[in-house]
View 1 (cartoon, rainbow, N blue to C red):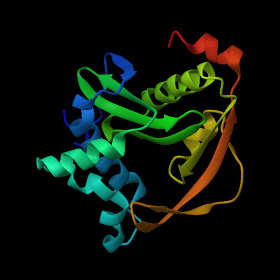
View 2: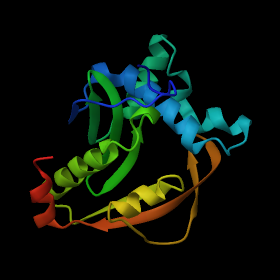
View 3: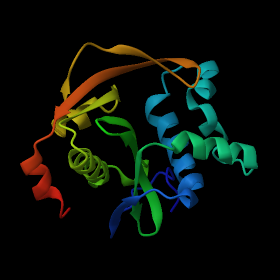
View 4: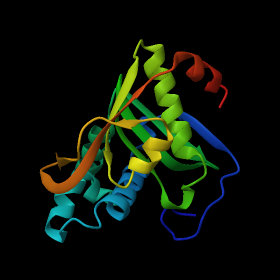
Length: 186
């Protein structure tokens, strides 16, 4: 079932793994669909394509578009959640900074985001990090609060890919190395 098709997909198996280049097209579509639906609905139409950047071409098969998407996905750490052979979520970041987290609409509330963040936090801790920061969209703030993140300042303006109009909440979580070790089996 395609992500965003409207009905809830119950994943029988969820594998969190490293991103690989062959995931770029599916991850690009997931980011475009999820970002558009949950984060850009209040942004003026003329700003949406700017906010999406290369992801506005997520369904294009042109090599230049696909290369731009693959480049935009690249980060020190990229993890995907694969459910029954389909990409259901992606997390990008670098040590101590969670860059972005997207879970397809049909896979919400199944622990996928929680597992992606947990895997990321484990890796940050393994690399010697003691805290993780994230610029959470207002839509995502309740999720991060549940994950133990705390607001660090007031809401700020976001500017990405040349667009504007989004706001975000800076947040931070101090990593508890003992607790992260217990979660490794997840």
